[in-house]
Image (cartoon, rainbow, N blue to C red):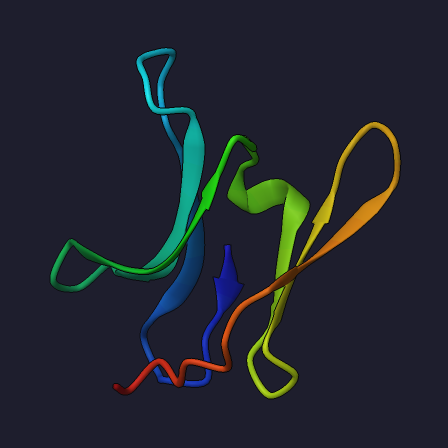
Length: 81
């Protein structure tokens, strides 16, 4: 998992299981509190934290898949908000 700009928090991707709806939630995981706050949801695509990099300043999530690199809009949400 990638460290966030907020100390002690990490960017995490949680793909849905095989149930509907298919998609992935991206958000901040706080291991001290064991909490996860969803920042963005990407429907119809599944990926994990291992294949993702978050550009907080640029407002994009980059996901590497078997075909190439995806750049997904993130909305520039600051993790402290």
